[in-house]
Image (cartoon, rainbow, N blue to C red):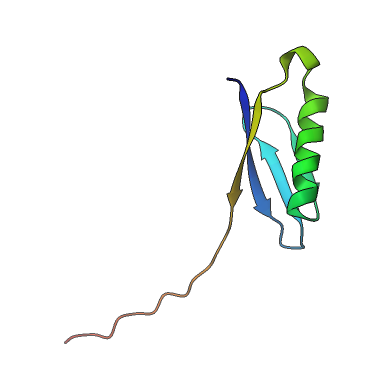
Length: 75
């Protein structure tokens, strides 16, 4: 089964960005629901009807920063 994989990132200024792996498909939207529609539309526009993938897989990537605290010295 031919499927497209897209990496989805939340944008710092709000909204979401999706980019397909292995093809030049890129789209943005304000909400996850809008992004799903935008990705589907972008895939439909990128491929001819006879060559459409059977599925689109979205991988949501979230960036998180944590502070590291030094352990107290045991000496």
